[in-house]
Image (cartoon, rainbow, N blue to C red; front, side, top):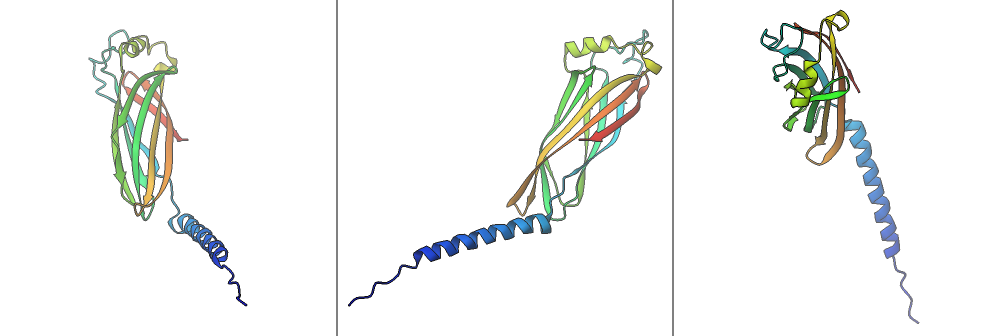
Length: 193
């Protein structure tokens, strides 16, 4: 009489699946506890009107619409992570007046090493004839306290990467309100979204 051997392959399969699930669970716990990815920190260092010279301002309290009005944004982007590099792909800034986009600028992609900061300067100005004609209609004399309000949106998209293997996608946004006079930027406030 011959004994039938029981096949143990289903038990090995179940054991392998359980081991794989435990390994994935362990990696997930390590990722969020040991590595703990933090969003990069965006700081607006300064906003100024570049070259607010007499040539840029007319005698009738209008801004001359020849692309001479340029707003300079100086910002810092810090990577607070201990072991991860932040690779940013898209850094863009838009300038608005009365809800209409006047200008847009992109910065080339780059990387920020762990516990490091990069400084980025962006120059925004009118991007076409329609933007320039809109600027021609700005009258500081009729504005409240001779101030004109612009808004700017800054967006940064990238990935926080650990050891070139684990990656966490992040996006950072900031909204700024700028009050300009004929002499330059009077006040600005920025809020991270």
